[in-house]
Length: 328
Ligand SMILES: Nc1nc2c(ncn2[C@@H]2O[C@H](COP(=O)(O)OP(=O)(O)OP(=O)(O)O)[C@@H](O)[C@H]2O)c(=O)[nH]1
Ligand SMILES: [Mg+2]
Image (cartoon, rainbow, N blue to C red; front, side):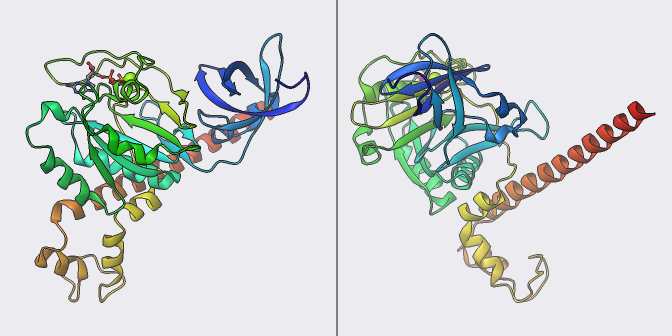
């Protein structure tokens, strides 16, 4: 470690409440934010995976001075707090979207994660886990492949070590992989299998509905010996759509292209002649379900955007009103 007061670049490996952990040369150091961070908007604060400039303090918390430019940034709306985004991880190359082949499986949810990955600048990789419990994984693979041509999909069983060799192609030195998915999907079990060691705690799922027990409670960055970094995350209950229209459009880019081929630029794909969407559905090139999925995700994104704008308008008006009252 460099001497006191010299600036060094480390990586945020854990955040719990307001306490930050900085990884530097394989060791973890406690960190705190420089005061000016508190005047910044939430997206400027460090998240797990961020590279940060910090000043080492051998006696206590090191001072985080600056977040380095991000290569990618994964975010979603915080379901518990209306109109607030949750910033999840930065500098992720591959987002492993982990879904188990039981009640957890949902094509709609996978499409949401794919949009979030693409929006944030990470490559989406769908990992269908627990293949040992499923008699026809091929059916699910085909379904996932149909969501988007931007998606790669792998079927694995972490506990029997099946399919893990396929994931090696992503494990190149310098790569960061983040795992996301529902609680109980098997994210931590997969990490343990890749590493060959019980580094993360795992626990059984509820038998009645296949849901997990929220075993992992905070995001954690793990460095593997081959120069690969893995980020484990807590299971998510919902994946809302907000600030993600570009990601949705890119996921369903073939539909966006079709829409541009309609005879009328304001075509509602209803009764208008020369509608490319209707023609694609009629010819079997596009399924109604997939088109509906695209529209629904976009609608949710627009509604959340409108709500956020409305709330920020109220907040501004409230602040202005309060200021006036105080001046009187
Ligand atoms: N049969 C089978 N069970 C698995 C597999 N992978 C994980 N499990 C089991 O699924 C349960 C949940 O696994 P975890 O790894 O804790 O799930 P998680 O996604 O990390 O869950 P959270 O930390 O709560 O988000 C455990 O009982 C695992 O043993 C698999 O490939 N096959
Ligand atoms: Mg876990």
